[in-house]
Length: 477
Ligand SMILES: Cc1ncc(COP(=O)(O)O)c(C=O)c1O
Image (cartoon, rainbow, N blue to C red; front, top):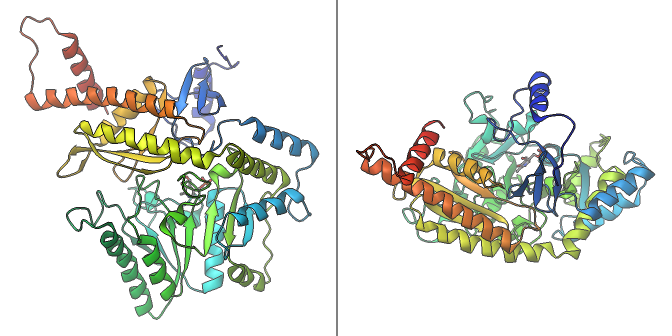
């Protein structure tokens, strides 16, 4: 059934261009999508065309899950007010979140977005340690607030990005495929690579100590998403946390993208590294599309904040509607056993993606649960990023009604982080389609290598037409 909205798409584009800041960029800029509704792992445009959503980790339990929608609607019709009043939804949510955490992490603060959660985490770290210096990972993104841009090399590294403040120190991303230390050049052992990367953080800690100061915080995603779907090597975070704590700093785990069971084996991605952070931040999936986020920390850190005598107030943070929605999201994760599903479907997706290595352009395939990355390279031995080719693949997949995106410092990593209701059939459809699209690129590579000239009688084969079309498309990127 076509779902036609009253305003034509061209009019929506016109109004957006006129009234919305151009820095707010659209996906598929040359031909943006107008999405008008969503169901489970699917989104629909204004013409009723259905797209398989492989990137929306916000719609964690599926777009517009009826239980979540109902919870929001009910609570909205009763009351939405601030957290200075007692409300059961807030305390129940706090208790449920704490029950998913290691014992030491038992105090919650509620906010409205991942950026706010990380900003509050940094504020807590400053108050508790009384130190200033923060260690972040290269290519990391922690939010759009000024305080978070300061610790987000993802933005700082851009040509027009702001200058990195002196108190921010950037450690290399523990990327064992294309990072500073790679396998097998630097070591075959994952543990050894983990140690090498962790000791880079140790070096920064030593430099800070040499200034006669202590570290304030180490902030990192437990699996780096913006850096290109990075799975840190074994033992990495454990050793990093030792270095940071020895320098009197606290460890912040940003679970905004990767939390709430996405990794399949655990509720929180930091658990896959066997560590216990001092502060955990969460957001995106928490409200399944509704803005709600949180910080969970230790009683000692929370007490340091209380002792300042400065009240923490946030008009919308922890309002009953947000809390009712977040509780409903937790209900669905439990009732539909979505963590188990992420483990099962994720491992199927990963195995199937491995088969794509038959295409020379696929350099690396990595993932945990429903967090998967496929890295495209022009040359496997040099691991040269295939940026334009990745762009081509994303656009072609859109033509096939499958939405994926790309990331990493060179934008050459195809990323998959679908709603957790994603199924085995969806995974098969994605990989089968990718296989076809990558085969188109293989043909194109052969053409470029052989410098094929047009067929002499002037009649082009359909193969030749396809090759020409692809060459043109890639050149235009
Ligand atoms: C890892 C990470 N942390 C924090 C944020 C900021 O969250 P929000 O956009 O909800 O402010 C993002 C957003 O993309 C993120 O990816």
